[in-house]
Structures are given as C-alpha cells and as structure tokens.
Image 1 (tube, rainbow over the protein chains, first blue to last red):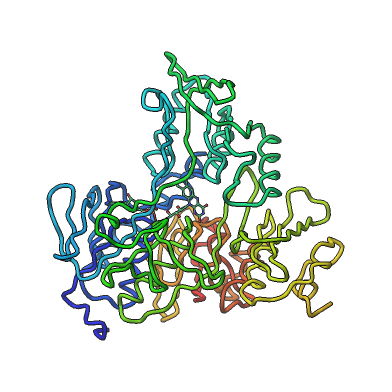
Image 2 (cartoon, rainbow over the protein chains, first blue to last red):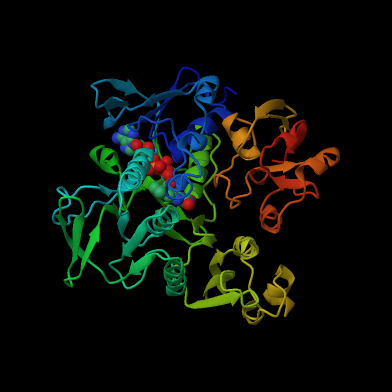
Length: 420
Length: 102
Ligand SMILES: Cc1cc2nc3c(=O)[nH]c(=O)nc-3n(C[C@H](O)[C@H](O)[C@H](O)COP(=O)(O)OP(=O)(O)OC[C@H]3O[C@@H](n4cnc5c(N)ncnc54)[C@H](O)[C@@H]3O)c2cc1C
C-alpha cells in the first residue's frame, strides 16, 4: 500500500505501553511502510498493566506471561524498540525529539502515548519513611512482592480506595497480608462509581477480612526502626510495615506542554487523535478527547481507550481516517468478584439495581438520565454487561418495571420498552 | 506439549506449540492476526473469538455461560464459536485446529 506515501518516512512513538505498542502494530497492518521507532523510559519489554494489581501480585502469573508482544514480533514487523530511553523534549520547529542521553531523532509523524503516573501526595515524612510504594510498573509490583516476602508481620496500609487500591488490597490479603485501606472521602471509589457500588465493595472487603476505613485523611508518616506510624488529621494512628499509595494519577503532560501543544486535563486531541499540531498525535491515558456518544470531553484510564485510540491514530496516519467513537468499557477483579462496566455513569438521575434471585454477589446497576440508559455496572453478571452494551449502543429504551423485577426473565425481549 | 493450528481470515495457517496457558496467550504471543485478547484473558472483551470445526469440538468441550453471553458482543458468532482465552492448553488439545472468527 503506497497510497499513504509512507516509504522513507519516520513515525516516532513516545511511550511503549498499551497505547504505543498497539499503535505501532496497527500502523503496520494499516500499511505504513516507513520506519517505526518506539521509545520508553521503562527498560522492560512492554507488558500489560492490569495483572500488576491482580494475578501478578498474587503470584499466579508472572510478568513474562504478560508481555504485550514477544521481542521477535517487533523484529518481524520491523518496529524499532528503544527501551530505557527517556524523551526530554519535542522540538516542533525541527520535527525532532531529544532524548535524555543527548541523542535526537527526527520524525515525520509523532505519537504521544505517554500515559500517566501515580500522584505522590505531599504528606509529611513521605521521603523518610521506608517501604512506601506506588503501583504502576512491573518494577513496582516486584518491589511490593519482595517487601512482603521479607516482612514478618505483613501489615500493609493502602492509602486510597480506588480500583487499583482495592484490587491491591484484595490480592495482598489473598497472599497473607493484613491489609487496611484508608480512604479520604466518605466512601471508596467515590470518583468512579455510585454510592450503591461503593457500599457493595466496602462490604465485600470487610467480609473477606480487609479493613476499609473512610473519612481518613493521612497527614504524616513517622518512621520507626522497623515500621511506620501513619497519622490522620483526626488524630488516629496506624502502624504498618508496608505502605502503598493509590490516590490517582497525573497525566504525563510535560512533553506536550513544553512543546506548546494544547493541554487541558490531558493532551487535547480531535476525533482522529490529532493534537493541535497536525503531525503530532496523542493516544491513551494521556489524552483529553471528545466522546460523541455522551457529547462531552473526557479523559479515560483504560485498556479499551488505549487500544481503540491507538487504532484510530494508526488509520489516520495512514491516510484512512476513522473517527473515534467507542463506548467505554472497563473491568475490575477483586476476590472472586468480576465487575464489568460499560458506558459513563456520570449525569444519572435514576439508578436501578437488579439482583438475580436474591444472590448477593450477582447483580447489576443500571444508570439512567430520564429514559436514556447511560451505563451498566455488572457484578458477576456478564449477561447484564452484554445487554447493557447492546442497549446503550442501540440507544434502546428500557422497560424499567421489568428490569427491577427479578421474577421476570433477564433477556432483551423482556427488557426493551416497546415490549411492554 | 500440544500442537495447535490457527487459520486466520485470509486463510493463513499458523502452527504453534504450547505447553500451558490459554490459547489466546499462545496466539497473541505469536502474532496471530485477529486474536487481540484486549482484557488479558479474563473473559471481558470478546476479542479472541474462534470457530472450532466439528471434528475438534470433543477436544474443546462446551463454552461456559459467561463465555456465551460475552460472545454476543462479537461479530460472526456461530454455534461453534469460542473465546480462546477460555481454552487452556493441555496435551488433550494436541492437533486442534481453530479458525479465527474476525
Ligand atoms: C495496577 C493497574 C491495574 C489496572 N487495571 C486495569 C483494568 O483492570 N482494566 C483496564 O481497562 N485498565 C486497567 N488499568 C489501566 C491501564 O493499564 C491503562 O489505562 C493503560 O496502561 C494506559 O495505557 P497507555 O499506553 O495510555 O499509558 P501507560 O500504560 O501509562 O504507558 C505510558 C508509557 O509511556 C512511557 N513514557 C512516559 N513519558 C515518557 C518519556 N518522556 N519518555 C519515554 N517514555 C515515556 C512510560 O514509561 C509508560 O510506559 C490498570 C492500571 C494499573 C496501573
């Protein structure tokens, strides 16, 4: 395919993780014939992040089983992988990037797939305390595992009850740690789901022996010889051997800002993942993009978004632009519970919770704005997830009376509003 | 050790050998086109859809309820559709042939 005149051209991708690697391979399948160079400061062969807080932490899988692609595949597809290389600056005038090691590289097309990094709150004593970790990279997961292995009391304190914090809590509990989660808000998952779901996960954790305490704002760490004292603003005190911080992420936006690209809660991109510079694209966690289904600008932290934007980007670069228009979906695994989510729940004014035959751990939460179904959270209930996906995509109206009634068979024919 | 053949949409045959893990991992690690495994194998995305020819179905058994539900989100679903993240490689699968669905 030479329509795109890509022979002899260079596409540079910064960030070789979910979005960057997917984009590189998609460029090849879309017919990009020029060079593809992928840079990442992480020295590891690119890997999936989701298992870091799940199967990798519980040691049921190792990182080698979770590489995105084997090294040989980069070679076959002629994709240059430059690992352990940090990019410091984008020089738009010269169409080149500058590396920390002093080298530079020119580009015809540049893709920013630089993701996000954990927020490190400015808590007093954080730099002095030992055994404090975040969880974003394979190295982080390894460090947490080693710290736990060499620790007798295994008291783990997790700051922040988001998905990563709660998954980490469940996983470490499974392998014998005594886990406490401190959440500053009045409920866990406050930024990402409704109070009904927060309550369910708080109960699930306490049933399984993880201690979740809300309304706890940590203000200082006091290092002791072999553990750390954690102090909250209400005067309560906790002792822990290992502390994990999971209070959210920052977009890695500095490269874009310093290159004077438009940035606003993420690097701004249009529906073809193009930034304010037409030769520079951005994909994945680092982007602020428009979602046509919900008609608003959003930033997502998910595998779905990283993969789908990467493919949109590759087809745009190859001259076959397709607007990004995917319904967001996400999942989380904690203990034996599988949570599957589709859509964006924010802006709902009605919630319907449907339990299947009184089963406590099998239900679904349906978010509506008037008659419009916005999102579905399905707990151990793939059927609900699948139906929700179809209904939202099809903009179908749902028969709420049937939905709420567990004696009515859970199938599309019974749930669509025109089948009253 | 099991030898497994993936036939892709453009009729390319890839013969792979595996000892453990899922068929999806075997396929993605070897660049089988059309098998994406976006969720990493936790039965959440339906991007590892294959068709199992009738003569091989005894080897693979039946899809679980979750798997069948999720398959509804994929294109080209047939009676012999499976999500190959749910097929664990054992010696019993030796000689299996699957056709990539999308
Ligand atoms: C523990 C954990 C569990 C998760 N679980 C789930 C889940 O269950 N489901 C789900 O959908 N999502 C999950 N996610 C989120 C998902 O992993 C992210 O959305 C996804 O990784 C985003 O991909 P990305 O490529 O956009 O960004 P990232 O994965 O953040 O990758 C960005 C890359 O860019 C590199 N980089 C940044 N700046 C530079 C620079 N200047 N020079 C060179 N390299 C640079 C970084 O080293 C990094 O490798 C999880 C994340 C974590 C951390």
